[in-house]
Each structure stands twice: as C-alpha cells, then as structure tokens.
Amino acid sequence: MSKKQDVALPVIRRLPRYYRFLSYQLEEGRERISSAELSRKMGLTASQIRQDFNCFGGFGQQGYGYNIALLREKIGDILGLNKKINTILVGVGNMGRAIANKMNFESEGFNLSAIFDSNPDAFGKKYQGVEVLDFKTVEEYCQNNDVKAAIVCVPDSAAREVVETLINSGIKVFWNFTHFDILMEYKDNDIVVENVHMNDSLMILRYLSKDI
Image (cartoon, helix red, strand yellow):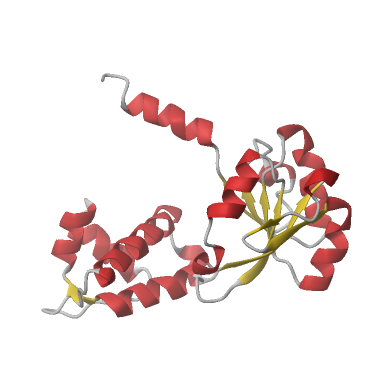
C-alpha cells in the first residue's frame, strides 16, 4: 500500500482547506506562519495541523514555522494540482452549465477538454471555449484523447447507462453529481469517485441549525 493510501481520508479532506488558506496568505504578502497562528485562524489545534503535515513528512522548521509559499507548493504537489488530467463533462442541464461556466479546472488539476450531451440543441455550444459534442461519440473521443476523468451531471434516470458507457470508455475518475451509487455498482473496477449530494449538505445544515 502506498503512502498516499495510508493517509486517512479526513486528513486528505483538510488539505484543500489548507491550500486555500495559504493562497489567501500569499495574496496578503505573508511569507511565513507558525502552526499556532495557523491553528487559530483555521479553527484547528496546532497538534492536529502538525499531525496532518507529518503524514507527508512535515514541512515546518523549529522556531521558524512554515514558509507559506513552499508549504502551499508542497500541498499542491500532494493533491496533484500540478499534473493536469484530461477530463470531460457529461450533461449541460442547469448544474452542468453552471459547472462548465464557473469552474477553474486548470487550477484544480484538471483539463476540461470536451463536454457531452444527448440533446441535439446543445451540440456546438461552447462553455469557456469548450464545445458540446454528441454523447454517442464519447467512447471514441475518450480513447483518442487519453481522458481519465468525467464530471457526471445527468438526470438520475440516465446515470447508470452514462456511467457504464464512461467506464467502458476507460474513465477511472468520477465527480458525480447524481444519486447513482457508482462505487456500489462498480466496486471491482478500480475507480475513484467523489460524490456531491447537495440535498445531503442542505440536510446537514438544517440539523446544525435546528435549534435556531
């Protein structure tokens, strides 16, 4: 098992937050920061921060703290942000259009190379310069363009068929905005899935605010 696989998922989920916070500090002209200050500003304990960073070898210097630019670069390397993978988006309904229009994929380690839909009215339209293609051509496109990842924004009723086609096309990485459980259905296919369930997030928010 690799070091990456050894690291607990909660630690991995904190890394983007560290990266974002350090980016803000760089924009303000800061050069270094201590774990104590970092903990105060982020609402974590200094011990937790040191433990998180020690999972990857540790980056601080005793009595100096952390070099912000270097720490941000190291976290970016850990997250894989400096190595772009070819990605497609499937589905240009409301959610798909919002993602295609607003996301800065390049800064997050992804290269959005094509968008697909099954509605002929959408063919040829462009979002941030990326053209919408006929989903019937997705397998050929993926095989010819070394596509590794897909953002799935289709209706739940179409999700199973779409995901099966994408897996057959060689896709291993999914950002899934449907309620279709990809990992449950394809658990033996060596795939990686990040599910985004907005209803779940809203219910959690309601739980946290139920006494207000």
